[in-house]
Length: 283
Image (cartoon, rainbow, N blue to C red):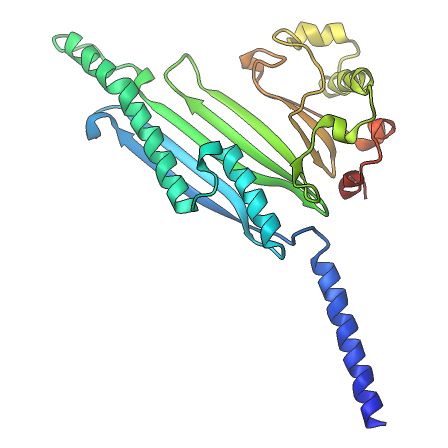
C-alpha cells in the first residue's frame, strides 16, 4: 500500500511539472529581454569649446531563452537591423565600441576641415556665430512591440540631425514568425490579390481617424501629397489590429509627421489566409 501511495504522488508531481513546463512554453522560446543603453558625446578637435556630436543607443535583445539556437538566430537579426550587417556575429561590447567609434570618426572626418575653414574665414568678425549645422545628433532605440505565441514584433525608432533644415526620424517594425525565423511580409498573411481591397480599408480607416467622409477631404488635408497610399511592408501585428506605418514624406509632408493606420482584425478577417501565425494575434 505504501509503495502504491508513493507511486501515485510521484505521478502527480510529474504531471504538475509537465503542466508548468507547457505553461512556460506558451510563447515560443520563452524569451526574456534586456536593453543595453549607451550614450556618447564627442567634440570637434576634442575641444569642449567646439561643436559636438551626440549618439544615444538603446538596444533590446534576448538574453535568456529555452531555445539557445533560436535566441542566437534572432539576436543576429536584431543586430543586423539595428547596427547593420557588418556587425553580425560579434560580441555586443565590441559592436557598441565599433559603432560608436565609427559614428564619431565619420563626424570628425566630415566636419573638422570645414569647421576650420569657416573659423579662419570669420576670425576677424566678432559678431559671427558658428551655425547649428555643425552639431550632429543621432538616436536609435529598439523595443519588443509584441510577443505572443509564435509571433514577435521588433520595433526600431530612429532620429538623426546632420545639419540640415531639420532632422529626420522613422519607425520600422519587423514581425518575426518564430517557427520559420523569418520576417513576415504581407503576402505571407493575406490572400492573393489582396492589395485593392486592403487599400480601400486603409482609406476607410483613415477617413474614420480624421473624421472626414471622402478621399478628397483627406487629400485636402495633405494625404497622398508626397506619395500614393498603398499597403506598406512596414506594419505591426498585435492585439489591437494591424498597424501600417508611413514614415515622413511617404504619403504626407514632413510637417504632418509619421502616419499610423490601425485596422481592427474584424474589418479585414476575410482577407487573411490560413497562415497559422495569425493565431498568435487572433486568439
